[in-house]
Image (tube, rainbow, N blue to C red; front, top):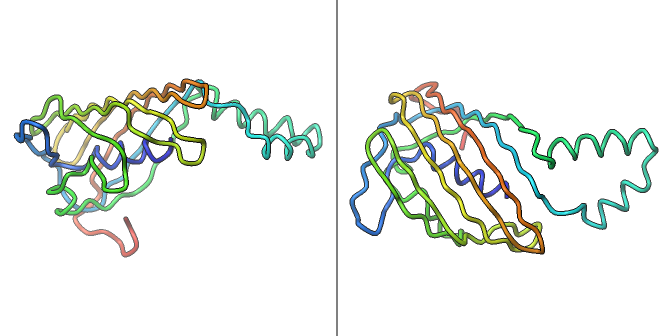
Length: 184
């Protein structure tokens, strides 16, 4: 699931994507270092795996209560906020950023202008760590200006006897033309 969210975030800053019609307008964003902030919420996540349940059973009541509260917060639909820095290169903006060679997703561009893009994928296979799940994603990207981007994402994953739903809001802020060494 985290991989799907990462793909969505990477896509938020990418400019050129291939569509069936072959006519996609790149998003007008600058290359260089970006700060990406995201707030995501998931509901319907699978039950606690047996190996984690065994660890919980070995904790003191206080430790277990603290761990269960943290898990409930993260897995029970409570929004989680985080941020990271991302180096966006010209090559990323010129390549198909949605369809990665190691992904089993087929992204379709619904709309595309220099300031707005909507992309969707259906039956994207995700979730190697929790068993294979089929995931549908709808991502809408808006370029406020060449240094500020906003996006929203909704997803639904089904498999392993469960249905998970998630949504996210993202902001990207351009920090500068150069990227520190080691920034991806």
